[in-house]
Amino acid sequence: MKQIFVNLKRFEIPKSLGGICQKDDPKEWIEWIIGECVSLGIGRYEAVEVCFLLQENLLITAREKLAGYAVNDTKSVKIGCQGVFRENVAKGGNFGAFTTNRPAAAVSNMGCQWAIIGHSEERRDKFGIMAHYDPAVLREEQARNSANAAVDRLINEEVLCALDAQMKALVCIGETAEEKGEGSFEEQKPGIEAVLKAQLLRSLAGVEAKQCQDAVVIGYEPIWAIGPGKTPPGAEYISFVSAYIKQVVKEHFGFEPAVVYGGGLKEENAGTISKIGSIDGGLVALTKFTGEIGFYPEDLKIIIDKYIE
Image (cartoon, rainbow, N blue to C red; front, side, top):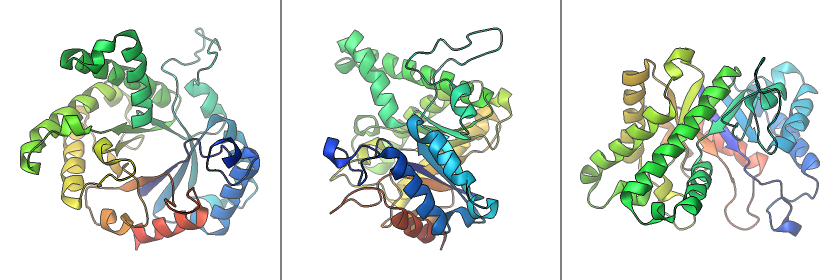
C-alpha cells in the first residue's frame, strides 16, 4: 500500500486575510475539497491510501462530508490531524485540563486516524521557544545540539500519545543545510546518517512496545531543499536516505517502516520519486506554485496518477 499524505497546513485562510484560500468560509472550502476529490475518484484507489492532514477546526466537517458518500467511493481516503499534544486525557488522570492544546483523545474522537508529528515547521517552532529561553542555542553548537535533542524527546512523547490513542503517526525527520555539511555527497553521508539516526532513536523511543509495524510511517524532509528557489535532492540522495532510515528503524525497533518523501511531492517529481524502491509515497502541500498558487483537487489527482503510473 502506497501512502500519500496531503498537508493542508493553514491553507484555509482567505486571500483577504493574507492567505491563499479562494473561499472566505473555511467550512465551505473543505467541503469543496472533499467533494471534488471524491468526484475525481481519489477515494477509489486500490493500492494507494490518501490521508488529508487537517486543521482542527475542519476535522468534523471533513468527516461528516465523507460520511455522505458511499463507502466504496471513499475507501482510500483517511483523515488525520496536524499533531497531538505530548500529554493525553486518561481515565483516572487528566480529564481535560488542556487549554490551547490538542490531546490525542480529542482528535481521535473527531475521527482522526493519523497525526503528522515532528514536521519541520513544528520542530522549528519548538526550537524557537528554546531559543527565546536561551539564545545560546542560536550561537553555540553544544547548546544547539542539546535543544535539538530536547525537541526530539518532545516529539517522542507526542508519538507515544498518538499510538496510545489508536492513531497512526507520520513521524517527520530531516537534516538542515548546516547538518548536511559541505563537500561531495560521499563526504556528506556520515554527517547525514548521524543526524537522522539521532532523530530516529530519540523520536521513536518506546515504539517497539506498541507493536506498530503499520502504525508508524517516516516522512523524510530534506529541510535544506525546501522553499522557493531551493534545489531538491536527486533520486540517488533520496534513495540513500530512505534506505538508511529503514535500516536504522529495523535494527533498533524491530520493524521496517514505510518511508515517504516529505520534501514536496508534486507533478514534476512524482514519476521520479515513484521509481525509488525504498520510498513508499509522499507528502503533498501546495499543488500550484505559480499564478494562482494554492491547493487544487484536480492537481492532486494528477500527482497521484503520475506517482502510480
